[in-house]
Image: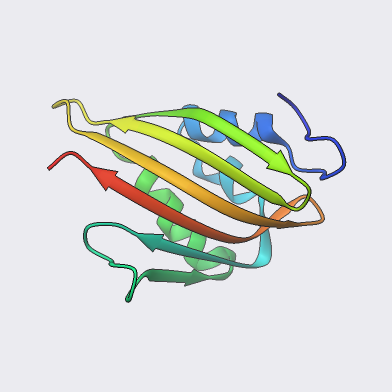
Length: 121
């Protein structure tokens, strides 16, 4: 992996942050004015959870990556100023979560992210 040619986005940092569950590593990939929208069983498409700026995004990442679960970056594709990646997660009790993200990049940093999560029910 490494830095995606032409974008300045560091895919290896993304992998390390996810798989080592390091929220501060992941936060380093976001622009100061980034926006993240989360859509899942609790925040439906018409009312997504929206976080603006690194402070709100940091709180979200700290919560997610402090949980007792494993995280794995499955797929990561960078094309121009767009990034898509999928992450698979599992809690110790076997419950699985699949997270898919579509991202806009500016200067190698995430500016917008839409994250869709599906959980075992």
